[in-house]
Image (cartoon, rainbow, N blue to C red; front, side):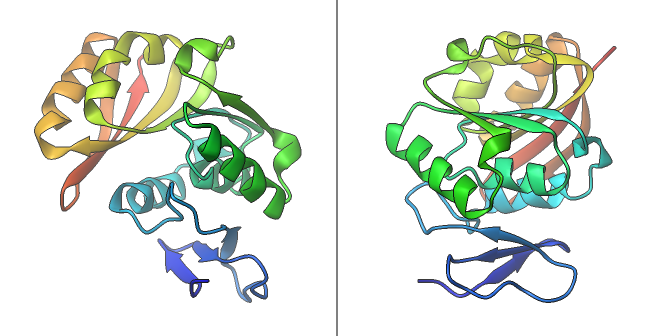
Length: 195
């Protein structure tokens, strides 16, 4: 078991069976898993950006490489309408399912075991992809196509040396940088698809 901790100004990461926090914090109830419960700098960076984006409210969201489902859960607790969670690891998908149930938002999530190809829907308002930079490079066209014009794309898990190439690849697909954060080892880039 771990002790509850806060990320950003709104989120409190808490283990199951811990009493709900008091005050204005949004509790994200997470079973400790191999796929991250918020300690990694890329997850933390994504959560800090998410809490600042009013566009999350009412959004149809895609979470690619969803892991424990922490970003999907955060998006829903910030008012997103529905999230499609996709991960290639069956264990990760199972972990996300459990965490979604613990947070009572499972009815707003579709879980898919597989790659981006398994997602039939397009026109997402918000896409979250906290995966490696080299994979983001390969997916630039496919991922941008899934995003509606004016939609937001939150890319993280990008090692510093891939940051420039990733931004360039998505700019070629008609996206522009909203914010680019360099972390200790990794980076997070928020982009929008031009209308």
